Amino acid sequence: MAVSETIVREFFELHGFFVRQNRKHIAPKREDDEVDFYVHNPNGSAEESEVPFVLESATDLASLSRAVVVVKAWHTEVFTQAVLAHAPEMFRFAGPETFARATEAFGGPGPLTKILVIPALPASGDARQQSIDLLHSKGIDAVVPFRVMLSDLIEHIEVNRNYQKSDLLQIIRILKNYDLFAPPQLELFEAPLKRKNKN
Image (cartoon, rainbow, N blue to C red; front, side, top):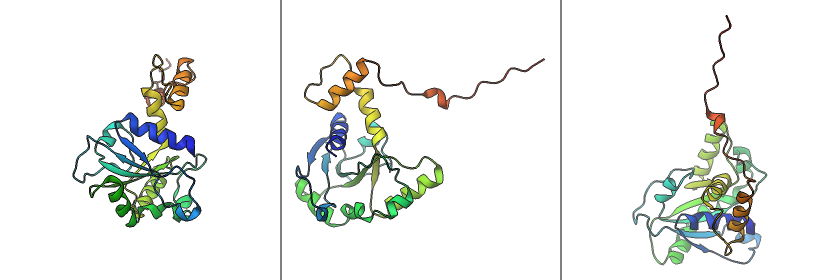
C-alpha cells in the first residue's frame, strides 16, 4: 500500500497540488472509510466546477480545486460492476460526514471532489459504463486509474535529472535511462494497411 500511496502523492504533486496525508498509521477495519489524502490545487477555481468522471490528463486535473482521495490498490482487479457490488465498504468515505472532516482539514468550507484511485475500469463500452454509473451512484465524483498516473510519471521524468529525494522517481529515471520502458504502441490505433490488388 505504501508504494501505491507514493505513486498517488507523486502524481498530484507533479501537477502542482499540495498533498496532505490523512494518517501515517495503519487504520483498523472500522476506519476503512477514512480518506488517504487531502489534495488542494492552489491554481484551481474557488467555485464548484464539473470534472470528467475518469481523470486522464493534466487538463482534467486543472478543473479540480480541493479533493479527498481514497486509494484502492487492488492491482490484480478490474473494477467491474460485480466487484464493486461485493465491496460496499469502499464507498463509505463518500458519505456526508466526509464534508465535515474535509472542511476542518482545509480550514473552511469550499468545493470538494471525492476521488477514488483504482487499478482499472473494464475496457468494453457497456461494462465500463455500468461500473462508472455504479460508482457515480455511490457518491464518487471521479476516478483515476493507476495506469494513467504511472504513464504520466514515466512521461514527465527526465533521465538527466537526479530525483534523489524520491525513491519512486529515481527508480523510474534509472529504468528510463536503460530503455526498459517500451514506447507507446500507437500503431495499434493506426488504420490497417490496404492490401495490394492482385492482377
